[in-house]
Length: 250
Image (cartoon, rainbow, N blue to C red; front, side):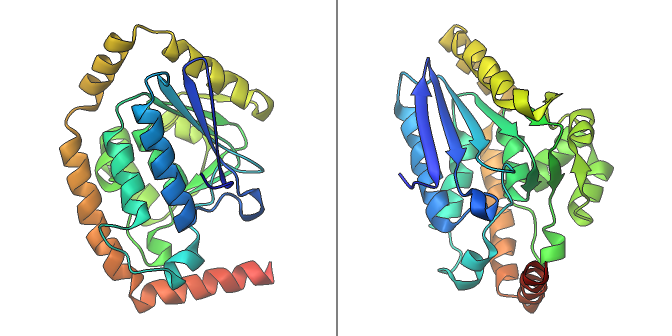
């Protein structure tokens, strides 16, 4: 397991923490591989009933590490990102997330696969895929309109509009908003409460709520094909150059 992905287990809860605070928990290919393996281990461990996702440092997740996409291996069905996304779509145990600070791209779209989300008031969320010359991933083009409606989803995805924790709660993307100091306490309490529920009924109810995962998996694949093409586009490379130049200037 990568030291940039921390895992701990207690009282039926597996806590998975992004641990790259110096890069605002931007996810590298190696981190995707570790997340995929960690979730598979949690799925297969009968002692784990619930998984809680969180992030170290000032924010939950700044999205993908763009340098990896510029310099890494070609995007394909075997890519570590795809393993992680398909695991999210087919994961059978309850998933929770504790979100704070900057939460971008995949940091937001993975929340659509969570059953419960707690956000700190500090959370600032955005999905700037189009601005980067890309398209949404993680089946967000399917799941977000289901959750918030077509027009609100279009605004969030087409414009990459930044929104705060209160807006995320109003849209239904998070269950509750708390002070940052109480974030993990609240999220861990919810995770323990779920872990103490009758497990058969818990898992069956979750399956009923989520429905057939094949439609979600099919949308992940459809998005990925366009995402891969856009990674080769001048739009993407120009957007990343501008983004990185802005970061250096800042």
